[in-house]
Image 1 (cartoon, one colour):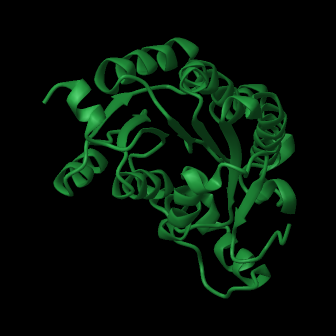
Image 2 (cartoon, one colour; image 1 turned 60 degrees about the vertical axis):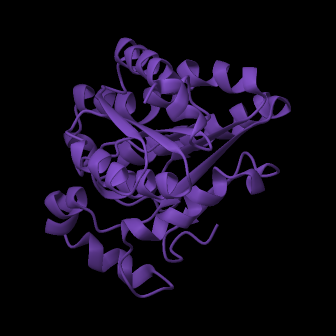
Length: 254
């Protein structure tokens, strides 16, 4: 099947970053279920996500990509153009969240967090926005965190980077709304994923602490985020832009 035929056989083309596992994989699977072809950017192996989509009758491919590197993002964007003819939807989920006290956070760690979590939004939007504007339709969904609103200790760099993502989205939404492109943010709370279970979040008992603050007394799962991304990337969300949707069990209560 040629890339043109594949593109025509699907409603739209969605780019999802950080979709090898966890929340990003859930986003990719839901967007594929919604009828979109999916292009995945991840430093880790995303073959499982691609296989799950293809086994369900969808179209997907993955490219090893460092979202903090503009050249790597540009190569990924060219691959998406070659395979699917460009992207209509960008869901930027990739991120890192080292749990470390502020005075133990060195400049290298700070810059790495900002590069992966915030600079990446700049690189990816620069790469895919022109095509969306040319079509007069686009959906950009950036993933932040309710950590920006709750300010937990040990996550100064992370919370700052996610606050930057929210500010980026709000201002960009005002700038490009006239072109039919919306920009919104999903802010997850504590979600049980392979990454959070393997990190210091579990070791420090953060799951229990966050659960105690939630209105809904269960820990979130990647599947809890699926409907949010489906709505914000839909035609039905054409009048929604510049917004932050907290999916956190009622911690932030924005």
